[in-house]
Length: 296
Image 1 (cartoon, rainbow, N blue to C red):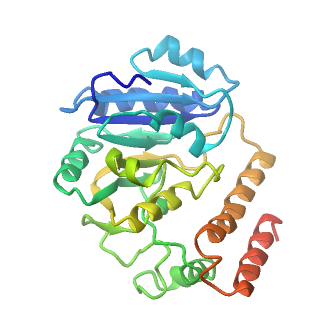
Image 2 (image 1 turned 60 degrees about the vertical axis):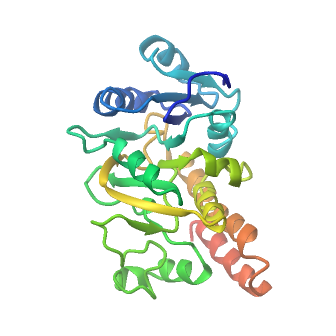
């Protein structure tokens, strides 16, 4: 990326891996429902992680208004996004999944979030309300820190039984007022707006995480540096979750993806909690991760 190019207010990064099907759905809605109406300088960068479905050809043919970068390999979520974050001089950077959709009638007008962050310098990350295809909340966009206790209450389904009780509902912080702007611990990398000056202080995404938890890790690092993470429900984006590989998905792929999810939980624990708790607790965490990855 050129360092001397005109500074953007917002650089939207879409990481793609064999997601041609979803690019065709997302990009027109992104341009028509947001970019063409924005009062800010906004750019779109699509990073392709060595796709084999002609996604790059599609971008060069039908979406020439976007910048397309070929990363050269499928190095994972953090790796691919970092390719576009590095040397990016935009004031704000947004990570956006390819399997998302922007809504009409200013429902997905990110300008409102940018204005909010301009007025609140302590905010490093803000997320719109991310809804699933059925209109329900994507819980990954509204998360608490996955401490051992929060994780236990979630997997033991105590959070489901007592969703409005803070003691049991820390994993997704469902006890908070979802209609109001408020602080959360973490949001999903599927739709997160990040202050670039904060990235320069905290660092880019941790490429040690191939898939999952890199967004949790990033949010924790921002919080540890004194920044806030904000849930902004006035603006909405649709996320067709777990379907970005719809054209090539199969049971084997789904199983591998699930294993990544649970093994990453142990990786996150090792990075942030292993030295804070007794060793036997890590063995308990490992035991439950193995149960999940083995499908038992």
